[in-house]
Image (cartoon, rainbow, N blue to C red; front, side, top):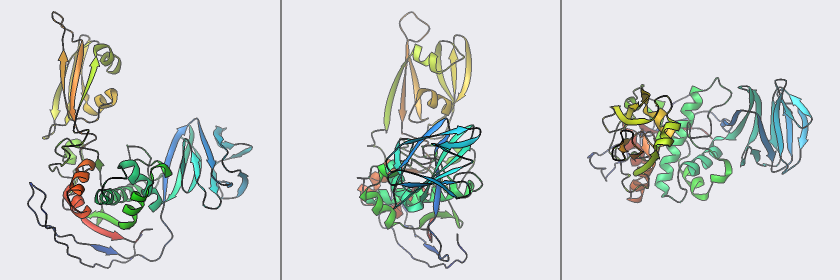
Length: 388
């Protein structure tokens, strides 16, 4: 993506320190100049390994086989089911090893339950059908920013999200270069919902930060982000195993976020149904935690056994917002087995990298997207690359 490097130094002084870090930082911009190239296209898996997928187009669309030959055309605004037949893709009367749906006149494609820009690639995969949206990188970001943040938030927060999302997507694209697709479309990656989440606010944020990414030692970083940390972000190695020098724990600015504190209640019957193998649950006790209170493992004691579970297994089973929680039991007088449990938690997400609610509050208080990014991604550098 780049053949030559031209280093141009810009120095911007940050005059409003973020407490408790009293710092005056320098933003070093690196302009990486690449030869003229076509627009970067991302491959986003919309539905993967499903029995069937609904497809369509807002305009008449050409249907092509895996070799790119036109084999037919589907009319505008009509829905079709794509299924697997004898290991091949079947659409209406056409059967091929792979298929492409290419709208005419810059139309949109329908995949599953919504409209997307670009075109659709349909392949047999994982015992079913996988539908992949091929979309221009900037247009992908128009959607992601609106899916990950409220598009009415301050522009500086949206710009910070745009740079983080651009960096994350490019890093994942690099890591998945040998796969059928570059990224998925859900929270396991970053959320992408097609044209539904585009808006003037997301267009402005993406366009204003065109080509800007976060780097560390000259490499694009894994710019992880989350909704709210509950007061303090985490060092990445305390949550996952791989230490990264730019994902350091810092105090957050999310105290007025609606997910800063939360409470969930579960009856004994609900817990027993969701956490299996220990019978009626007597207690749930954190065994290991991070320095900032996120649970790593939790001991679940029941009247029929005991298990030590990963906190992520518990959050998945109970649909909790984060792993930063405590558990209290409610017992009926005279009974050993609690009748219910209350889980009190903080934050929403893994608490690593940029806090979106923290970014919102910092932007609302006059901080620029440069300051926000370089606060949450410690030691990182803002760079600009030639990517369209």
